[in-house]
Length: 329
Image 1 (cartoon, one colour):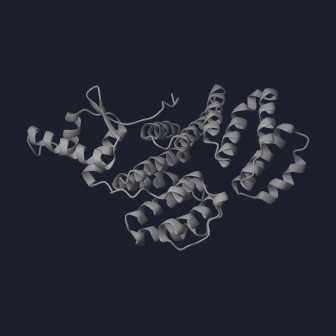
Image 2 (cartoon, rainbow, N blue to C red):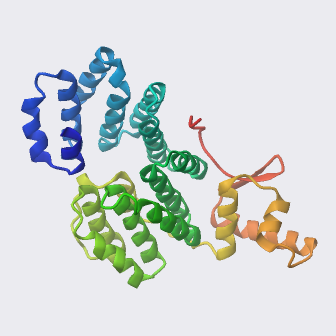
Image 3 (tube, rainbow, N blue to C red):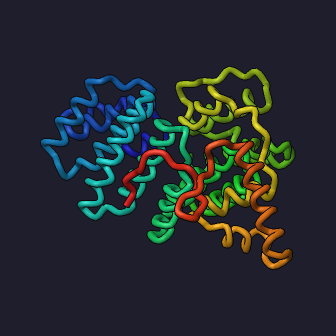
């Protein structure tokens, strides 16, 4: 009942359930955390109660850590959220809860993008996608691709961003009406607006205007303000963290990548590649090797001018620059 009311964002039912859970400190703590998340008001005392429950109910550690991670995100404490999600991942993995542990791992990476926004997370989200797809977990696999699309969007590599956005939505059609599916549609709508394909964007936008999910409703208003510039007042308390980022920082006034620049980033984001692999993928056998090498050199120079620090050359291969190593094994 608690989880269903939480997923519906039914605050009144969560409040009514407080009376039912008084006899169980464990359930009471989880309920109060979820209620605090929905009300966007989580006090430090709730975290203390949650940690106490972990020592009393170690089998519930994974779930408690997971909810604490989300509660920390609500407080914009992304380093703490990152630690809670990773602890949840380890605890859930140890009891064989593979689907939920993968969701915790995904959220660990997502929180890391907020804590360390300067680095790229293509490899991590792609790994989550592969793991989730192998388990048949369409919600996590689709959400991971939504985040890959967002990584490309931040670079203004719009061809790849739209391709991954479409793939994520195709997967999430198996989870209709969920906030994950609707956030994926919202992300695609944003991408389409940025490349001025407004007629297509409007289709997604109209389908989202009646959403009952608080994060989606706030995102729709944010999209109106940031992209459509309607001047709508945005309930920032309800915004999903990725839309807080878009609203606060907008998009950097940088030049969009060309088709070939986009393709280079896409190729290297999958795995490091040497120059001969890039030449084969980009030019095939259309031109001689010397001409292809010159074109690749010029292409990489242009890309480095547009996105300084994005690509580096190490041990004979081109890499997307990463920051701190994340424990996703």
